[in-house]
Image 1: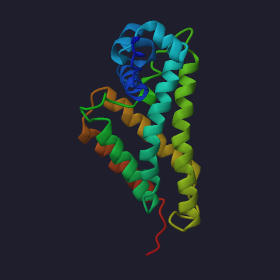
Image 2: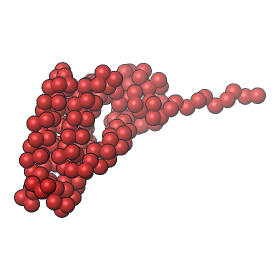
Image 3: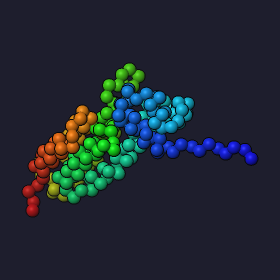
Image 4: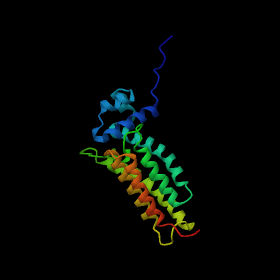
Length: 201
């Protein structure tokens, strides 16, 4: 009886490990040795599966955005625009200071200090962040149509503002700010969104 086929590695688990390496070290800082060790594979297997390091990053980002997308669906399901902002920003304060995760946000950390040969990486990350902003914008458009936001409110600008705050919170977390500091920022931002809410009772 011949040898059985070697067990294939769990793709999702391997991508989770790669995602953490990119998250902690950024695209430039993450080495092939670090990635393959974390994923439990050898370099030829990495190249065979993902083509190259950038291909692996895109696959890891697909995994990250899929997981984040489930959370964003919960965020935009909040009953009011104010609640959407609070659920998102307070959630970010908690998630990005959770010791179980690398600090900050992969969509910010991953593209820091990209040099020659990896110019596409920051654009890839920006495109992923834009997806979240678009989802917020659509939710705020609905909030305005429902009378939850003032007629003078600008849903696109509001979504851009909340997104910018979230990115800033990610930078703070990666720089060592604690949960309380991020929550303070979130509270002020939620108040700003609340100021755009209608006065209906």
